[in-house]
Amino acid sequence: MPIEIKMPALSPTMEEGTLAKWLVKEGDTVSSGDIMSEIETDKATMEFEAVDEGTIGKILVPEGTDNVKVGTVIAILLEEGEDASSIGAPAAKSETPQPADPEFKGTPDATDPNTKGNEGAPVARGESEAEDHGRPADAGPAQSASSTPAASGDRVKASPLARRLAAEKGIDIAAVTGSGPKGRIVKADLDGAKAGAAPSKAATPTAEAPAAAAPAPVAKPATVPDIPHELTKLSNMRKTIARRLTESKQTVPHIYLTVDVRLDALLKLRGELNASLESRGVKLSVNDLLVKALAVSLMAVPKCNVMFTPDQLVTFKRADISVAVSTPSGLITPIVTEADTRSLSSISAAVKDMAARAKENKLKPEEFQGGTASISNMGMFGIKQFEAVINPPQGMILAIGAGEKRPYIVDGELGIASVMSATGSFDHRAIDGADGAELMKVFKELVERPLGMLA
Image 1: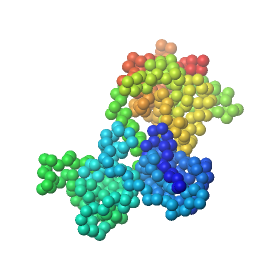
Image 2: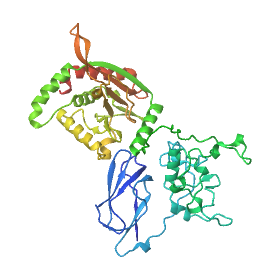
Image 3: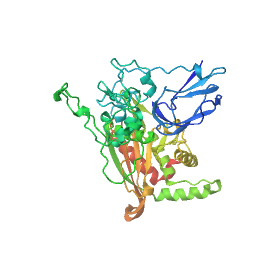
Image 4: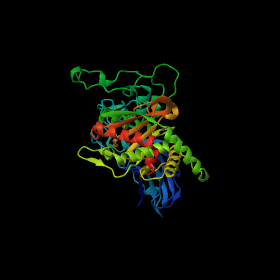
């Protein structure tokens, strides 16, 4: 009996992904453990291995397809003795409307224009051309595909790709005539269509539907100015960053606390440690020491090493520090686990290794999902001070500015010292201002007397 190969959940939070590349083709024989495809999740590109052995009978989802829901059948595997004739037609998907609440997990985000019809009704992203052939024929005389209206009732029939391209180009998809099955709009129908060719039906009342009863217009993408430009498709990572940071700023009440920290003792210790570690090929960065200082501070002030949930406050017994790393695809935060008890050389090796693999999208989910707090260092760019956005569900993030020579009171007298500004962003639902201030005080003391973090 043919085996359905389904889109896997490659991380605990994965709901959909991009089928980036097929490494097999129809007719290929695979065994358990063979790499069949590369799948782009919200943070990394991962390899998908075969579980069973057999022959690839049919590939149902072509490579490059976005927004493939977890559990979607992407290919059919034939067992020994079977051929392609044993593959049945895929079952049509349910047309039952899904909740439009963006907080409802497992349904498309109701704010995503790619998931809506012209009147705002959610449309399943995985809908395929084959599904139209599986639906009962409409009552009434048969019509040719070229003359069939694109809409059936209030809903515009269009492929997910056509919807996305129309949204990107500002094209009113309801005004486009579909050439696909049953008048479905496909990519080719958008060629030559002009942006804003016709007003949206949602905004135009008809005789049958008075203006007072018309639904609220659906927000359209911003019109691109007539200026030379290029368009870059949003990656899954960039979409996730946008969603999570928006969620953080809208739902997490941030409180910001800043301290100025003298770096001279830390810089001296770093120089001495690097001299002693040179024979082992280890070179500590200032950031490595700051990761350690934050981790030790969190253990000293456990009220800040927390996570807020609607009915519980989770206090962690160790400090796993997420380190912000910039990659070509966007920001990712690989995690230094047990940073409070790790040696500085171990922290340095872990950060270097994960940062390199992050830039190649090769991190495993467990290496960037989790963590008890984050640190973001923009000192290398000369940024003096900034306020970072909390990475939910963590309770805080530390923003590190550039170290610079400043006038400073040294031993009771005005002098010149190397000083940096550090700003903690705290989830005020879970962490009181006084507790956040205590953490910043301990962090400052550890950096200014760094031997304390090594004891």
